[in-house]
Image (cartoon, rainbow, N blue to C red; front, side, top):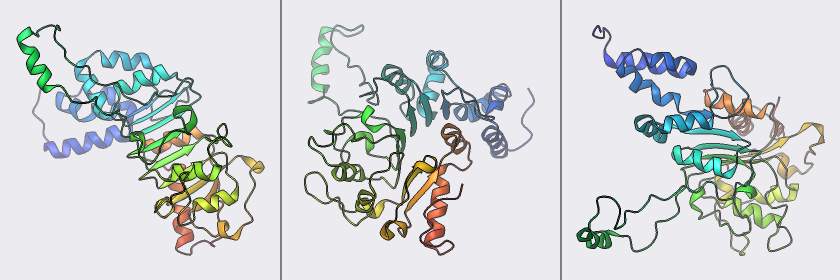
Length: 330
């Protein structure tokens, strides 16, 4: 093989750009040279699309492919560290757990139409080595005991930053403390497909208290809802300090919320007639056509609905749009 003519830094830039611009080209690029394979193979695993909505530039995947990749330790290690975006419709909780076991570094997760999903985000704990396992002698047991943790390890979750889901299918919304739950430690963007509190209202929770809990997620800056809460609840959510279920204030919750989106579903979605909401620049209503394609476009560097909403909010803030223009142009 001929030595490279271009400097390695320039080669890396060229192949990295080519791989990002056209992901289906990566299998061919893997054959160019070992160094090129090391550069571009992680990009191939960055976004895993398990839908049947094929999009040019974003190949689809399957659990069978994940199993094949996981059978090779080198590729499995790449998958563990490289897979950041997953869209997985119609999966069971067991399938999702299998997927997250192979891809524990995922940051952007879209789960829709699944079943038995409660608890599926919890990553399995590493197996402990115990006396009697292969290679462990009786003399080794004292070392094992001295090295054993005093208490079980804390539950582990992927470092999720974006979640699109039916929240009540994943968590017990009545018992979960969203402010401290480890699944939400890194979360900045949350889309709720339905009203997560529909089945628990009137028991121990009011709607205002439920959404106040969600706003307690430490880093949450972007919230989108498909079932719009009553507009008085929306106003409370965007007020300085909505009340939590225990009577305490969610300090700083609304101040860190940068965008609050009500996703419209045709002309059936009512519009607010409350000036306090109409002129709140963070409050926007918008249609999202072709949900899955919108997510896919965002993963290949194009606009998704979050980006469009951010620009709309910015234009209202700086005066390019009237403050009461809360409906985003299609």
